[in-house]
Length: 154
Image (cartoon, rainbow, N blue to C red; front, side, top):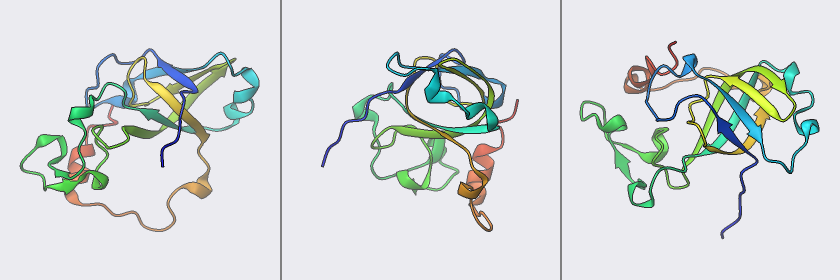
């Protein structure tokens, strides 16, 4: 089954290249498509964080991974399946990030820590609710903690 997903917005500003670390220093604007008015973002400024779903649109089809690979191509990290990591070369090329809301201005959502580059298509925006965060302990392997050590550092 196939289905259509259209961008609702685009990332404006921030980085122009996908470099893996220090994303918390980045600010960007998520600018809604003209079919949406300011009322689409009404009330979002009452939240501290937002979850942005976007498309890794610059990953060419031949670079898509469907099996296992070493995260960041580091042979010292284990070979793990594409669904056991958050790399951009995923089958549907969808990225999801929780970032801080700086302000809402008409049809423009200003955020910090969005790990998407300038021009990236956004397919959804959701407020972060405490009740949707993980319940109980969150665990992950040591290689994942090592990989993420500098990812958000500003």
